[in-house]
Image (tube, rainbow, N blue to C red; front, side):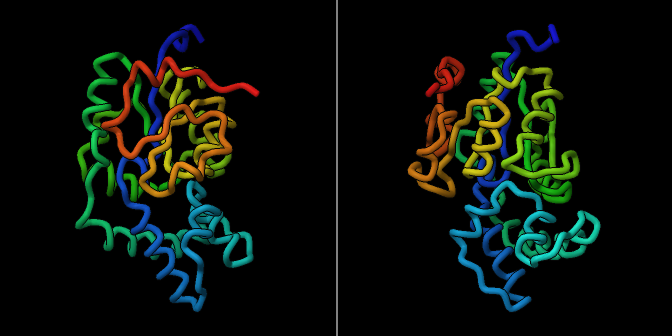
Length: 228
């Protein structure tokens, strides 16, 4: 426990946060369901599912309880659609590399906590040569439940040796911000996917920004959780 005292961490959601790719995920999900004669509303689908694991989404929309194993081949179909669509556009959100470089200089631990499967983590982190920058990478294979459950963020903090109160989560989706709240963590929202108004109900949001270039590390760690 002494290792955690005073140590700080930034924990990044991956899709929609490190990379601005959620539009491509939506297109691939809509195509996946269209192949099965299901027409979905993109905005409602995002709000209901962003941060949830694929097997949870399959169970909800197909109306049956899929296990991870049963959903694997369906998940592979959807994710291959996504990677094909997004590969030509793969890049980090503006200011990301500069922010993590400054954070590392200041001794801030860095982690990724995502609902993505291993193939997508490899596609993004290794495709951009980012994995080397992180103290921990936690994905869908590491936890049983997706967001808004706090498991993925708590495990990332644990692997960094950081107390939840000393970790700041970067997110783009309400379910992710709620997961951070349940983990006892402050959250920074990037409006890559939704407007700031979509996060008005959350008392753990300490900053809302268009991209990483607008953020100041000292100010983020100085910000306190709001209390009712």
